[in-house]
Image (cartoon, rainbow, N blue to C red; front, side):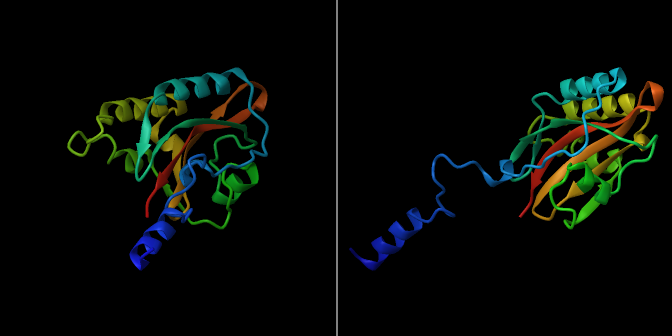
Length: 180
């Protein structure tokens, strides 16, 4: 066998370059264990369902395509949105030391709702999702977008839902961006 053939065979057998057929892409392997209980009061479950429906079949496109997952956890604060440290305590992010950027809804959606930069045909759906977030949380300033990580970035879009008897919940959406 020639040196060229040996090198080619070594490349084909390298699990980093050519992963086994049964392995999942790296972007889907991150898991976290939510430490907070699910908020079960009516306003929280209704908001969760509305956001889940609004984001159905909508993907956050980067170096991967990641669907949105719903988030719903009990939250002890009335209107205050969590800090990155509190997100880690709740189990919504896996690495509390990871870099965290926060954005407004306008900042996050500005590049996703423009028809000029919409090569995937999702701008109208992202505008509908942004409108639903504003409706559910009662204003653009009532929600925050957290981007946690450097290359594989967990995206959380969260707001506070207030229920009866002092019940509160963090409700929103979670997805991934991969940027290398």
